[in-house]
Image 1 (tube, rainbow, N blue to C red):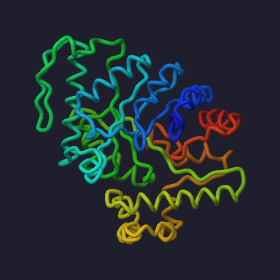
Image 2: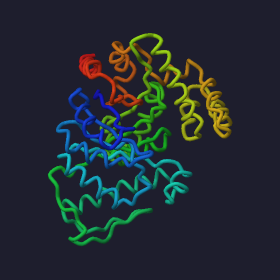
Image 3: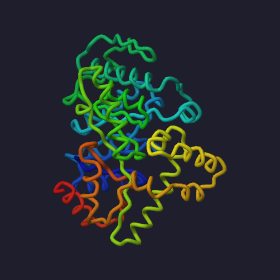
Image 4: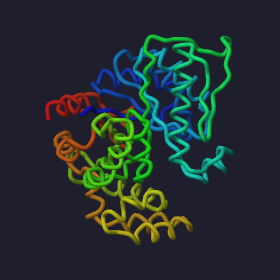
Length: 339
């Protein structure tokens, strides 16, 4: 299992230094997040200040860009970083795609599989000068000339990860993706009984299995040097969990763990902005199924005990702060590999 980290909430002049720092600390991968800022621009900076660490998006909103725009950006990043780029895509939800991005949202699982196939067709034309003739149910790529073709690169096989939580999107990842970004709203049981079987079913449609699809998750961790620090982090995770769980898309996890009404109750409070009441509704039993809770020195072993055999890559949901000292994190990555 590989240990990655998140790159977000940084000022532009902090990105280069922090990326180089993460590589020096021993992390295997660096992921960016598309929210208030673009997910790709920081990785262009990272490509110039790192040499070995994988660089990827977790996630970029697929439906916010055309397949050609996405293919072009990913191709350039792959060339810039020497073959270390991973294109992580997500669908987002209808309200944000239609009302924030002003784009079309329908049949998200079918649309995203078509999107991925179209992106790969564009890359094939770049690399092999094949005639553009992709026509899918939602997207097409049937026109190009040399002026608009990026041309071949040394590492043309760019891995594509899809993101999701519900069974249908997991199956879609199995059908077309190289990897799957598991939502932080996960548990070992949900991964074992829902996510992996659905990916496996999709993968079998192309002669593969779930073992051919790499699973990565930014996991909730509550940790610290003292019990008081751990307890404080538990409450921070509880607040974040309640925010996610108030969204209908994430209710599958709640139903799996026997809390079918919790999501509806959280949604009621979210509509009126009663965030404090929401956190109080999350029971400890459920929270500890989702979050890994351990003192910092014990955290590497605790992560392995939770996720060995069901995930291939992990990162902490909460990013490492620029002010954190290096020594503990260097020890963490070393201990993680030894666990």
